[in-house]
Length: 191
Image (cartoon, rainbow, N blue to C red; front, side):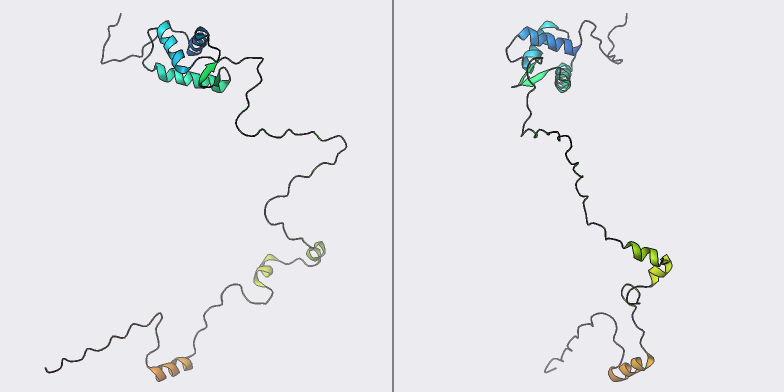
């Protein structure tokens, strides 16, 4: 028999405790309220009935209550948990209910699916495609006006234009905005 050793913590085993869903069902039946039992009432009943509970009891209880609620084993109504009544109609969710779909009467026309999104493709002329097949290389080079696509390249200047500009105004103008001309400082008067 091993003694309690704080350096070697082992998970505590609670063999006398039943499963949480069984404890929850027992607590709901023991509380015996018309609308079911609240979470605190269920927790108090379980603590009173089974004294030796794990440290994470409240977390485990919340987890199992949510899991049972999602699975349809419990009904949550007005902050109370209750077993679902098999004869009761299902509770409606929030919002407007969807319209019922009427089945089409026999012999009615089949409705086509909605149009696809986006711009419809251009109509192709079946005669033009069959008349003259064009190779992809020629199709890429030739266009309607005979020019290449995009911005044309910058034309080179002739030597005559360059020499005329340098003779008239000095050095050829560079690219970009010209620098600001600084006024010359006059010599101080009376010096």
